[in-house]
Length: 387
Image (tube, rainbow, N blue to C red):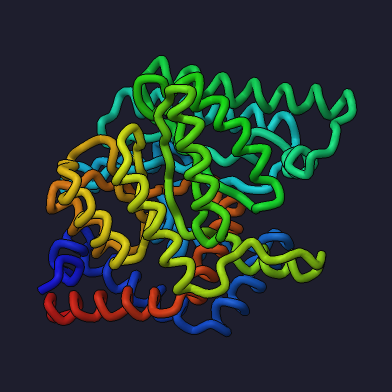
């Protein structure tokens, strides 16, 4: 039996009723029209303030999220860590807020999570999105090389100050920090800022991590260029490597605005690009890699490369990560073999986290084979348990 086929290990932490709920949810997600209708109805119901939060909470929210607050997440975090040797990354998944008060609030939330990380071995990383700390349009304007007016410059200085504060505290408390990737047309400003922070805080090891979305065909060149800078300036690179989360949006915008799409031509090209990035990072010293993937072949490749290079399973420079509620067959079987594994555990108010959840459901329907694989594994485990 291949490692990831072991459903007894994969679903050991799920009760029979949780297993049945997962089976029901993935059957729903497999039905593409149902996801589209469900997303539209949910959006409408939330905007109209219809009383559906209870229903969402007991189904999709509880399957893919840890809770409304950090404290809600603690029983799940403890259970995964104590009984499955799987860590958690607390992900405050509130999206699309544009006010200064909300950015300051997000900063306070991340600082609080860094304190959690310092206290608890089960939470090895903190994480945030660049647009959690500043307006999208501001990043976009800088990425396009446009000059900010005085007011915008002051606003950008506040964004930079938030980044600096969080990185400084993370460095002091020795808590590595994952910074998520976003849309290509705002990413350059975030990349430039994160590079400066790596140069400051990654002198001895990687504390500040950027994210490479490998469905972008230019990211391998970016990684190699960054590696050159790191060698010249003497800092360590930290990277979370993912396939990417905004593919349809990226393609639509490129077509509407008449520029070449930044996205690889097909899934096969993305897979090759992804595997090239993790290969490059494992083969070069002074790099710390967070392998964010639900792809079994890429996971097997990372394990094989680590063995070849003499990188031990529990070496802190190599972590594997999956989203909570998905790919338990990868997470728990890797952890069972002694690898460092963390689940991204989203939390936040139900209505604020819904855009995140809808994107998850839509992503699942668009990745060929993802949902049917989850379903087959759940079926196997139901049969094993005679449910």
